[in-house]
Image (cartoon, rainbow, N blue to C red):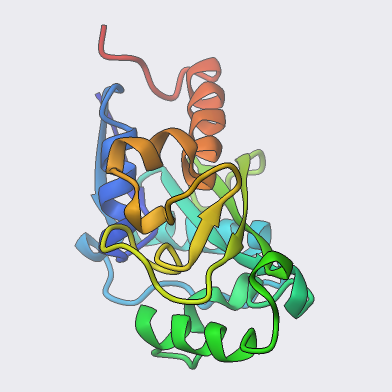
Length: 204
């Protein structure tokens, strides 16, 4: 059994990671078990922020850490909100606040021109000073709807329509999302790296 900390207090992310790690011998603790406040996300890229958060969580817990930095990039907004996705409408914005601001920003943009993508970068560090962290990335292409649809998921899921789908992410089941999402793609890549480096093992 391998024990590590997830550098997040986002309940939606915690659920997703627990489900995606279910086939592996991993005990995953939330960051809140060790420290109340997360790292300052001062990076300008998803990769920089993921590494900042992973090293911070590992320092606080004394355990290997996994951190995710993810967000939505909208082409009509020049790639915004990007790394500022979680605080697009302000430092303590709710998902509803962020979605409302995104719709306002895109009010004059036709739906077919609202191409966007979910980006996710995962970083794994064995300790806070790990000189060779494992990095994995995942991308989910789609576009932004003109109104919220669905009740599942979190973040921008109610507005994100994946390419080839007639349903928003918030209208997908958990299993469907975990097969397709940017985070699932990144985690599958990360798990392959973890297995190759003998950091985790499958429940077989």
